[in-house]
Image (cartoon, rainbow, N blue to C red; front, side, top):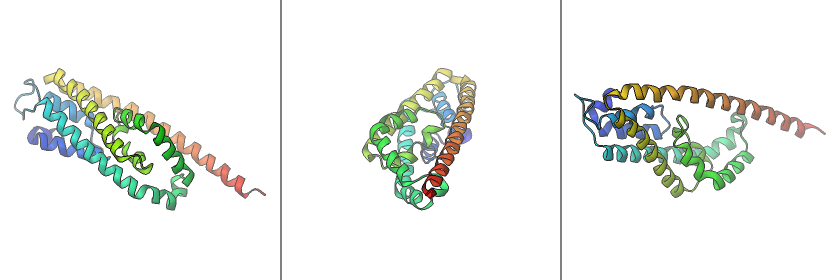
Length: 206
């Protein structure tokens, strides 16, 4: 990724931002710090970038990728739950609850989710399945993506030639957060499985 960005500049930044928005495993924590460092004279022998264009390409790419993920989830997410919900530990009632949640808290969820490592690339999927209002989703995604890119690119600008140490720390912080998220998901799935089993036994009881 570093070689791609340092040789192709804005094109690489835009393409990788789109990929991240599409929920592909692109470490934007490293990508945007590197892009910020390339806006300074501290990183020599590589393509030079400007902070304004960096934020623009990162934000537009992220929004386009997130819009694609949102549309796919909106198109097939409900059908998947309706057809394979038993295997996904989801039900029609869960869809209704998700819609109610996003109707009330969707704005906060999408905006804050864009600022959380790991989660920021995946938040488009539940928003799409819940059929959150498109225009609101696009606007909040743009604001959150811009803030995320500005925060990390700002760190890169401040770090200059020391961007490697900063990006390493930012990337390292992603692992404990990812572990906590996986543990939380695991507990949630286990709790959900038990709840569905209890509901099934209740329905079968005379």
